[in-house]
Image (tube, rainbow, N blue to C red; front, side, top):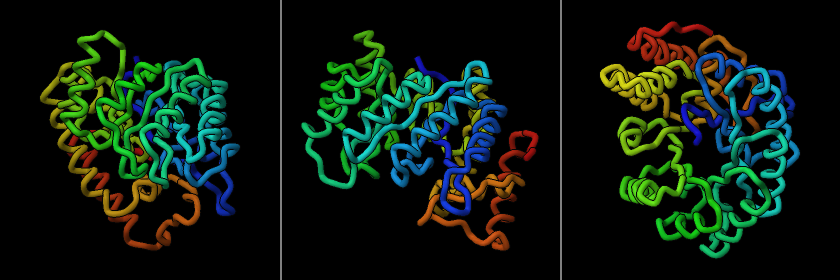
Length: 304
């Protein structure tokens, strides 16, 4: 079972648009050193749709090198792609890199049928010997999963579901049916939002974008929760939710770069056509103040 705190980590690029291997590796280790458990690689934060198969494979390799030096660190790469062949190739590359599992958003852009999407997931499941998680994110894929559809994929070997919409009726039914049937099917939250209530439902892992720039706060939340220190956990949850709301004034990938720069780190560049505000922009100072407020509220030490 996958447990703890994961990050949909950004991929850091150089000024010329190539992957900055050193800064990407530094960022991964920086998060692990602050309590992170695992990496969800080349998703939307990680610019996966803007990268080639070879580039995404390179990120898996960088992550494997970092994780190999850190006991307990694990990889859950995102392998979702528009083309089934690319998703299969990425899943095989992730398995070769030592991933504990892979996740995949449905094929996107076009309006695919359930049969199309089912075939896509079955191809990924058949291609590897590690668990495969479907990623329910209709905002980006244009495909909304139903309980019936997910249960059909479970019969084909689907190991679990990463979910971002957090539809309580949908997730609670899947979670409780899986528990009653002792199927081992696992739900992973695709956001820190909802962590406490869904933890009581049996969810034990989340993929939190905030880990990109404030992993200490997510670590505090997860550690307090797993220790059963509910007052501490609720305080961390409220601070997390408030900080998240204040920081969501632009794209989440850009926010991650801004947060790292505001903490005094060189976070390189996002991939074009994304771009950062000029370094003289007041937004960096504003972001630094927002982050400091969250750390102060929890009595955490704000370092670089």
